[in-house]
Picture (tube, rainbow, N blue to C red):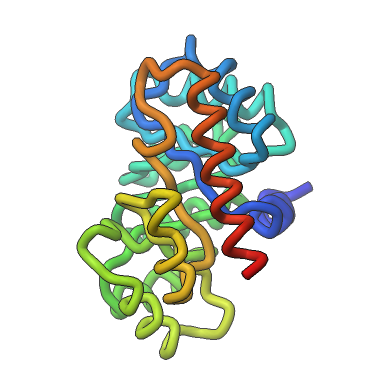
Length: 212
């Protein structure tokens, strides 16, 4: 299964990305098990975490059905490093055309960060599979609604930053297709059992929205 096929399948089931900033390779097995057993299939280890490539390798090996990759990817070399570690997902806080192109050329899924329509159109032209609205705390759901009115139909928009079970509804009403979830789900040192409980809360909240 290609990364694109896996992304389509996993995203359709649950469009929530677990952002595991600060994860260590020692924690990775238990945290990965907690999240995937709850139902998460999109796992991101930001590259400013300790030994992120090792954690990505562990998660990718232990959870082949999940789409595992890196966040805070800023350079073409980092894209290559993530690919070599077994990652299939590239997420950035910004839009860099070379980073997107390298990810696409390697058959990876790329979700660059954008904050303006110009960045959004540039990212899509470079081959991005979706757009990360970041930092979401700077915006309101109306921003997604306005951007999607002019972006190509079917463009995926995922707000990241400050997302919680209580505010997903407003973003969803504004047109958000999914979410990146960070410290509200995982913080370094948080027990795997607690992470699973939080994951299930997010899933329950999202599924309630999807049924509405």
